[in-house]
Length: 284
Image (cartoon, rainbow, N blue to C red; front, top):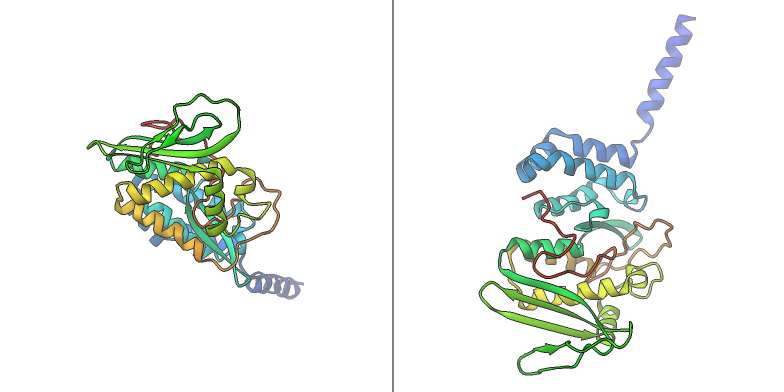
């Protein structure tokens, strides 16, 4: 009997050893490795533990990300860590977005709308940052020479005809930008691989996506380009080179679709100076 029991135990151990590790368990091993902990502590100090926990939670609750190599997902999370932006989807600062390239699921870092505002605020170069929708009747014209726009008109309906962005730096430089809805659509069709997908954020949150597109264009062309901002833009632009965007329909409202220029879950438009709901994240 003892020999039989020993054989059973040995067989059970062999079965456990032969069973491949799940992606979630591999991610757990990566995050809990001493080298990883040291790396995160050097970057995020006392916030390293919370960030590590958010990586595990993100991966374990997103079936699309679980189709990606956990090592690759962790690598994209490190991009957010280097910018001191959380990857919690609900916070809206940064996202790790799954897409497909030649049939292979790959993760991609994308900055969120709040993350874009956050990086701009950190520079200390801005006195005002503002962006939002323009309603029918508000746009009165623009000066082609100076670039100034006039949106002082009274709205005559709730129809959105365009989107604006405005920055003013602490040294007095001012710049405003206005794109009508047709220009935003043309830009999205050209640069966003998921624009025509009914499951993309463009389909469900067009106005928020459009607002971020104009603000991002403003900051990249006329804003103060800090090292952090340049790094974030470069990482996000890499998404535009994806050969194929994941198109599966999802019942998960938290799934974020890849876009070449913007990728947001639908945040509110920014307010002036310190936008409402965009408190500096405590990684600084």
